[in-house]
Length: 326
Image (tube, rainbow, N blue to C red; front, top):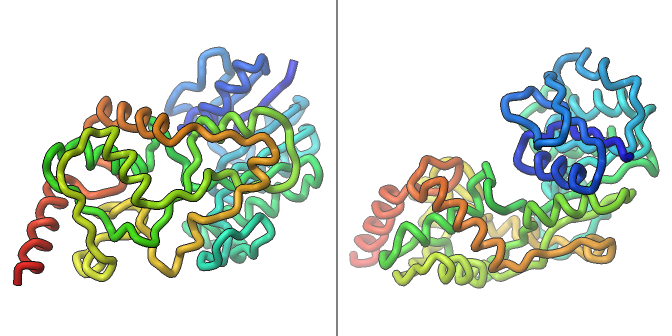
């Protein structure tokens, strides 16, 4: 029987990975703080990865596979140091955010990276991921680094893709505010496709795991149709949105999936290696339906980590209408 250690196993992606390994017949152990349960049929070991002794109970066991999704390089370095001698294979889920050049289109896995994080750079996400990759590469051919694009799907805690499902559904026949669609693109990976990919076989090297490039307007049209929205789509330019204090990409008072023109390469990465190595793609409409059902179940007007609340969106639409009338 295959012995798999998931460093995590209770979060959005890592829980799906643990479930897939379990369903494949593996004996799965999850190491997590224990705020949430691991999947039924797996073993949950409670531990804080910032504790230097957290791996003591795991060192003596042989692992066929270890999977890590941490955003903190020091946690990944500690895991490699403690478990590298007792595992046959180590998969690290990184991010396309590691790439330093966000302007050039269609770059592959050989594109230059950001400088790795140094001590004290705790909140530099991209730099942390680069430093974590460096640690995993010390394992040579036993290491596999997967760099997802924007991960989407039901249950997404980031609320980025889900924001648009909620925005169109809650608006009904009223208008929805969007950034200008022309020249904008979206590149996503369904969370279930990513989980399936990293558990299907033990690979080595580095792969961009992300979907095909789609026009922003086409993605919005798919979401709008699924949500049954019949109102107007009100597009507005970047300058006006920035002047109103609306943020790019994510976070409070933002418009998710909207990135500056200077980052036009961010969601236009090459995914040939993912395709060639067996990566699959859930049809966009199926992903949209799953996200929409999830947003309705969790509440279209709930507080969320990204996007605008409806009152703020309507206030902005009113402000825009008045400015255009002047």
